[in-house]
Length: 192
Image (tube, rainbow, N blue to C red; front, top):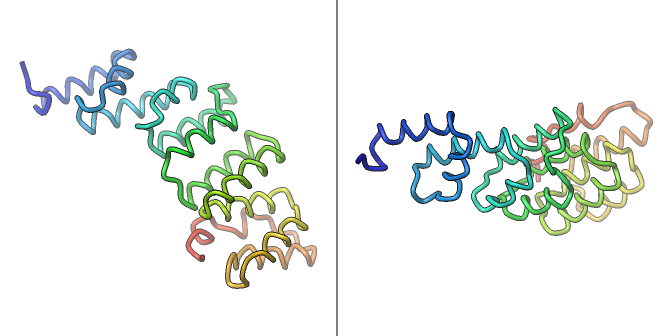
């Protein structure tokens, strides 16, 4: 019998993942007995084929990339894989989200949920995690809620959210700039 660390054993295991859908979950259930490469491939296959309901069982081993794979599937195919507000909150509570991830999530959620749901969800994120402030502000601009933008910016220092402040000034002057064109998620995440 081959050792689990033997390259031939690992290759056989990787090939079996392609051929046997049930084996994918076997790997996810016994993470300590498989190589990192095997686990990564199993998670990728799982994220491309399963629902959030099933994924919640493996939330502790999920990673950000595969979380976004599932969200993209939900928006691209409009298939119901259980990407609800509560499900997203469950995953975010377990994943190491930073500013860029929140911005990416906000852009996806705009396609999935109503403005009211998005604003409530991201307001709760930004209250518990300062990394989500930019994404909440992004949504306020997306929905052109200038009064709320002004309130938010007035609660923070002049040196914070510089790009959003510039966009807000242009919006007040009735300039037709959209938030996507003015606010690059990588730039706004690095400025504060």
